[in-house]
Structure formats: structure tokens, C-alpha cells
Length: 153
Image (tube, rainbow, N blue to C red; front, top):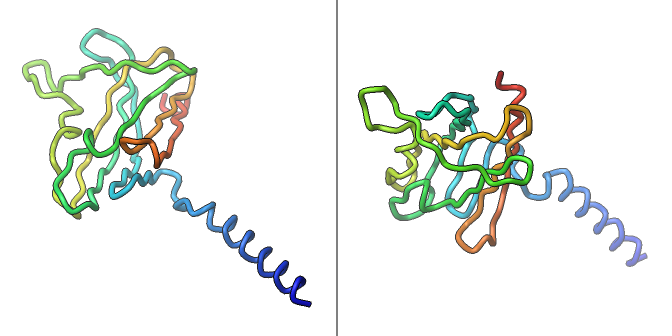
């Protein structure tokens, strides 16, 4: 009888774990790494200053740590397309400015606060999905997001 109860309890625990998506957040657009989180808001394809097709991915970065921290130094990320790492590229806010779209990634955010950040990377093509891998410094916590470029046109 004890074995049956133990089996039933085990089954309940397994199904409960599976029902909560393995402990992951229900929102697939929410990336959590340590004390930091990024809520994916969307992407667009624009031309960079050299005329290359560029992915601009927009996030709300939230710092839940005890110290001010920037997106760029709290979460490490790699963008790949078809197994090839994408190159960073610069997109200026306007023709008469040296301000770039991704400057907010380097701005410190106070504990408990959020900031919209944009990532800018040159695309290899306009059809192959882009995978973004997020991690902490030691890669002990990782998460990823895939962007379907065909839905952005």
C-alpha cells in the first residue's frame, strides 16, 4: 500500500512539474537570468549606416539586484542565424547625430527599475530565424529566444 501511495505522489509531482513548464515562466517572451529579466517586446529589420539589413530587437530590461547595473554587463547574449554568430552593427538615431539605437544597453539601471533597450545586429539573410542565447557570466543560467524574420516583413 505504501508503494502505491508513493507511486501516486511521484506521478502527481511529475505532472505538476510538467504543468508549470519545468519551472519556466509561462510567458515565452520573458527571459530571466539571475536577478535580471528581459521582456521581449518585438523586432524590426532596418538598414544600418552601411546599408546592411539589421535586426533591431527591443526589450524591457529589469534590474532586480541590489546594485545599479546595465543590460550589457548583467546578461550576456549571443545572436546566431543558421549556426553563424551575427556581427554587431551601429544604427544612428539620425543623420546629424552620433547617438545610436543601442546606447541604452550600456546605461545603468537602479535596483527595481526597468529600461527599454535595443540590440542591433547585422543579418546574414532575411529568412533564416535568429536565435538569441542569454546567460550569466558562468553560463550556469541560460535561456533563449527565437525570432522568425519572415513574420517581420
